[in-house]
Each structure stands twice: as structure tokens, then as C-alpha cells.
Length: 591
Image (cartoon, rainbow, N blue to C red; front, side, top):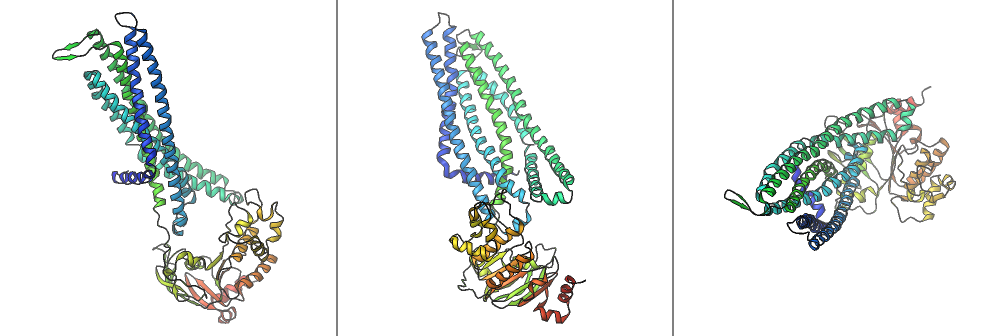
């Protein structure tokens, strides 16, 4: 990862940490206390050793005091470490909450284009898995990094105070450990970045297979599905193995170097201890204070403590590399521009006059779809949109709902450009029933009242009756209070009826029905059509239909082909022209 990008990610993560500065201060204070008590312990038991092996008899009072003090230091170090861990965990989980909240809010406000162009499993992996990796790798890693650095500096200072020659030897040899750690960890980030991407790809494939399991089984594609999974999983294994292999090399490599340093310090310190024999040691022009066995034990303990943090720091660097890779993916979601909700024009009471003027739109510059589209729809019209698959019917609906915006041209409602109307206000003008039904794991009543939380139970039940779903709702175990989980059997047709009831309860000024009765039996469809006739009366309505027999009474039929409206008129007018619609209609009734 480039240094500029890392710096930017660090600044952004610090922005999330800033509100919880108290936990950061607590972490620093308890880390310092922990380091102080850890460093004080060896001094106490070193003095206890000297009190036991001195030239005179054992000084038991001193031994007891030193051992008691050592025990207190161990206890206080444990308490400090525990409190430091509590501060780190509190900070960690709050960061997880804030990152995940912002990522989810960004997703809910993002443009449909982003959702359509990214695999859902990959997006889910970013919000769930990558946020956890950021938290574990950065916050817990940073706490270990801070404690390790403080331990290194404090230990180094004490060692120089005891014997600066041996301390210099340790300082000279230590860069070997740092060089080994830096050499290995520098090569791990690329593998970790590829690993999280492949993890997202694997999650996307699993979600697709679970969501389409019936189709997979129907076409006997289980083997191919497993084969694709194994291919992605094998790729993940190769990348993960490489990342973990280099990561795993860091700790044993640095430990080996540190063991060499420890052994060298032990030999050199023992030589000084023997030569000094409790008194001053003269080496040419250098005069060193006495080096006792107790001081040697202290020095060896410090040498071990001095080198040990380098192992932790090297591991932390690896974790942070992984965390930065995940943070980049999370912030990509957070940074996704949301929809423009601004607008200064307010319609008030909606009549429903809609005009599309010279509209041009395409999902990608390479593939043109709608060009120069012009349509004039009077208020209260029942408009049917028909045409072959891929002609642009759903695209036109997406443009009407402003799921996508035009590249050129404009759409007006009651003479006002829809881009000048606040988006939330504009979308409330429409009620929409899609071929794919969305129901949350909530009660039946909650799903019907979705978007209209103030609706009373009587209004909910009235809408359900109008949509002919009251009878099967009452047959459920808890009626309208039944929670729609995986254990509750609801057919596709029943799900669609519940969505129709939702729109009837919302009672919007304009309607969009995109194959709204595609999963409903013929008898129920006839009843629903009657209900739709009532709710459409006086409302501008758009009906996307493949079965042309259902739109014969439409006030206006828009016939689309290759992104353009090639014919428009009533059913009778279009049949008289004997054009594209005439052939399309007759093809459905050909014998």
C-alpha cells in the first residue's frame, strides 16, 4: 500500500477514535503503569539475590522485603494490564459500532448503481468481516505497539544506567531483529490485500448459491457450484497460505535473533561479574561500577524484556497490514456518494401529469439504451409499458423512480423537473409493486405497514382484505402478529399479495406495477385486478406487463423496442395500425 494511502487511512481511523479520547488516555496511563511495574520487579528480585549470596550471612529481612515487593509489583502489573485491556476493548467495540453504522448508513443511502454493480456477498463481507479485521488489527495491535515501544525505551534506559557497555552491545545487535521483521512484513501486505478480496468473492458465491439453491438443484448444477467454490477456495488457500507463511516467519526469526542477543548478553555479563567480583571494574580508561550476580539477573531479565517487544511489534505490523487492507475496503463503502436528496420545488397536491422530454440514458457508455425518448402522459392515465425482453421497460421505471438519473433530457411531474423535487418527497408520490417481493423478518402487520408506521390495525386489515390476503393471514399461527421467518411457509404468490396490500395501505398518488401479479393464480389475479381498478381510479398508473391480455383497458400503451417508444396509443388504435404491437399481441394467442 502506498504511504500516502496509509497516511490517509490512519488519519481517518484517528477521526473515529477521537470521540473516545478518554479510553485512549486510560490505555496510555495503564500501559505506563504496567511497564513501570514490570521493570521494577527484576530490580527487587535482583536485590534479593544479592542479599542471599553476599559475603556475609543471608540478609533475610531484605530478602523478605524484596520478595514481598516483587509480589506486589506482579499483582499491580496484572491489574494495570487488565484495566488497559478494558480500555482497549471499550475503544475497540465502539470503533466497530461506528464503522459498521457508517458503512450501513452509506449503503442505505447509496445509489442503486453501486448496489447493482457489486456482488451482495462482497458488500456484506466488507460491512461484517472487514470491520472486525480493522478493529482487531489496528486497535489491539496499536495497544501492543505502544506498550512494546514503552517497554523497549524504559528497559534501554535502565540497562544504560546499570552497565552502558553491555547496553551498547544490545543496542548494536537489536537492529538485526528489526531488519528481519521489516524484511518479512514488507512482503505480506500484498498477499493480505488479495486475501480479503478473494474472501469477498467467496462470500458472494456462497450467498448466490444459498439464495438460488432450488434453481441449482433443478438444473443439477450442484457439482459445478461446488467446483466453482473449490476453485475460489483453492485460490484463497494459495493466497492465504502465502500471507500466513511469511507472517509466521516473522516471530520465530526474530525470536532466534533475540535468543542470540540474550546468550551474548549473558556471557558478557557473567564475564563482567567475575572480573569485578563485587567491586569496581577497570577496563583501561573505563571505570565501571560493580557487577553483582543480582545485577546480572536483572540485566538478563531486562535483555529478555527488551527483545521480547520486538516480537510483538513484528506481529502487530503484520496485523496492521491486514487491517489497512480491510480499512480501504470499508472506507470504499463509506465513501460511496449517496443520492442527492436536495430539491427546492414542492408540488403539494399531485395531479400526475408526467412528461418525458428527449431523454437519453445508458448503464454504460459503450452500450446505448434509451435515446431521444419523448412521452406525454396526462394525469390519471393508466399507462401500460410493453415490449420484448431487454427493450428498456424496467429501465424506464427506474428512471421514473429516479433510481437512475438521465444523462440528458428531463422528466417532469406537473410541469416540475423531478431533479428539482426533494428525492424523499418525490418517491413518496409513487407506490410500487415489483415482481420480486421484499418481506423483512418482522410480523405480517409490520410488513404491510412498511413505510406507513402510523397505520392502525384496522387500516392494515382493510388493506389486506382489499389485496385478498386476509384469509391466509388469519390461517397463520399468530395471524397478523406472525413473524415471517424461515419457519413460516409463505408462497411467492402470497408474498406478492402482501406487497400489494402494502401499496394499497400507502395509498400513493401514482402507481407503478412491474409484473405485480406474475406469481398469482388466475382467479386471484382477476380479483386483484378489480382492486387495482379501484385504487388506480384518478391516479396516474404505470403497468409493466408481459401478458397483454391484462392491459387491454389501458388509456395509453407504450410499445418499446431497443430503448425507444416505437408505438403508443390505446389497444384498439395499435391493433388497427397492424404494426409491432399487433404482431406482439397476436404472437401470444397464436394457435
